[in-house]
Structures are given as structure tokens and as C-alpha cells.
Length: 423
Image (cartoon, rainbow, N blue to C red; front, top):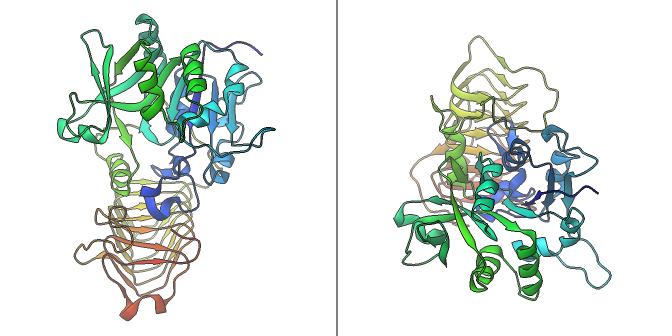
């Protein structure tokens, strides 16, 4: 095995519970994004664009879709005999068998994978953020500072700083204090959950903290390294970065893609976003149809109107139907004369004819008011909505529903229908 200077470990095992029914059957990094991609495509593309050709992807929750999407890494040029992409799931060991319990514990359980490449540096990434970053530039900074740990940070508004791990630095960029979600933050430099460690420092910290329950980088490993006197530096990043961990931020990030001059550009030649692409026919827009400010996936057929929306592949929009400010994922069928306002509809759903989605005043959701908010209608994958029903805002639906599930043909704002297997 050829020694690698730096390898990446991509944490992709998260459930993403704040995305509600969207992640009932799929890990958060495998959720569709931008009509064509999945969230994990962004850190994977960053790796290959940064010259990193060895990536361990740590999966756990509902890994099937993620595993089949990544495969042997062909779309990202990561199908290599030496290195490439490797799926790392929890496995049975001779002395024990355990799930990953925390971000650092997941890395600890895969130290043998890292050891085989004997890297000088290890890059730790999350699989659920939308951004473009050249990790090579961050590594140059790490080397220049002779750091043991470099943490990517970005400035956030002071009033939002208490939501993040906050770094306090000196004039040289060295981290002097680390505050995990402080009530009264001393700085506005928020950790992005992207770390470069020298392998020696990381290995020592993982072994020393191996008995800690739910061992986590932000809560345990970084404070341990700091207390031990390791050289910790903050690498400031000022580009686009979005944690799409809530339905609101997920919807917002998709909507930003269709701005006239998008803040996040999917089409830059020098920094391509790669994904697994199926061979699908081109999309079709009928003569009576309208499509304004939208992204349309391959194989989609539009017979109605679409405005300000992101539409996946193989979607059918029936005659007379109107879709506004919505995200429609792949293989969704929408009947005729249906109006959809501000909805997120997951893959393989069927929406009947004569429906109205996103009507009325907002009310708090009765199942999970913090999750199903932002005025959205959220529909989980493989769901069926019968014809001629009305659905209010801050609602959630998962499963095959029938007219009897809608009293007087209405699911009022704040209500939900979750059939067996949904969340």
C-alpha cells in the first residue's frame, strides 16, 4: 500500500432528524439536492477537486441509498486500486460489536483503515453541508502554522454565535479558547466541523478518549487537544457554506440555486460538482406549459406551470397544475389542476388531481413544531395524496393516504398524517 500524505474521513452516518419525513428511510447525506445531486456529492467533489484521492465514508443510519449512490466512486474519479473511496460501516469485532456512538468514536473504530495508509494528516469532514472548499489550501495553512489541529471556521453574526462551537484566537490565528454553544460568546468564529489533524495527534487523542461515551470531536477531542497544549489553529473560510440540517435551511439552499446570479453556482467549470447520473431522456415542456426561474431534471415532463422551483428527474406535472416555490424530487407524479405552494415532496410520490397544497394561515405543527415549520408542506417518499384534497401549511405527510384521512377533504395547517414506517 502506497503511503498517502493526507486522507479524508467523511462522516455520513447521521439520521438528520430535523428533516423529518425526508430522512425516515434515507440517511441525511443521501437526500436529493438541486434537482440532480445528493448532499454528499458536495464534500466528495471537494475532495477530488482538492487532489485528495483516498476517502473513507462512515455510514450507519439507513445506508442502502447512500451505498448504492457512491458505489465504487466512479463519478468522482475515486475508483482506484490504491486509495479511492471505501464505505466504512460498523462491523463485528472479535472482542465486541458496537454501533458508532459519536463522531470521534466512529473514527476510533476505523483506525486500522487509516493506519494502512500511514498518512501524515487526516481530514475530518461532515457529509451534510453544501459548500465548495479547496482542502489543499487549508492543508498549506496547517503546514505553515506547524499545527497539530486546524479547524475551519467562518464568521457568523454575533447574535447567532451561541448556536455553534466558537473559537477565540490570537493575532496569529492560534486558538486560545474553545466554547461549545456558549450563552455569551467571546467571538463570532464558528466551527464548520472540518478538521485537519496530524495523524500522530489524532491517534493519541482517540486512544486516550476511547472510553468516553458518545465521543465527539467538538465536545471531547478538540477540548482534549487544547488542554494538552497541542497547537490548534483556526482557518478562516469566507465562501458559501450551508448546513442544510433543517427543512427551512434545506428549502432555502435549494431556492438560492435559481437566483439570477446564484450565490452558490453549480455550473463552474473549474470546480465541478460530480454525481452518479443515470441515462435518462431529456426533459419535455409542452406548448401550453410554462417554466420560469426553475431547475428541471432530465426526463421531466411539464404540461402545467412551474415557477421558482427545483424539480428532479422523471417528474410529471399534469395539465393545468401550478407549482410555486417548491422542491419536487425524482419520480414524482402530479395530476391535473393541482396547485402546490411552498412544498417539499420527496422521491416517488403520487399527488392526485384537483389538490391544493400550502393553503391557509400558518399554525404550529402538532407532531414536531420545531421540525415542520417555515410554512412548508413536507411529504415523505413513496407517499400518495388522493385527488381533490386541500393541505395547509406546517404539515407533514408520510405513506399512502386515502380520502378518509382528510376530514371534509382537508388537512388543516399544523396537522400531520404519518402511516406505518413514516416519521
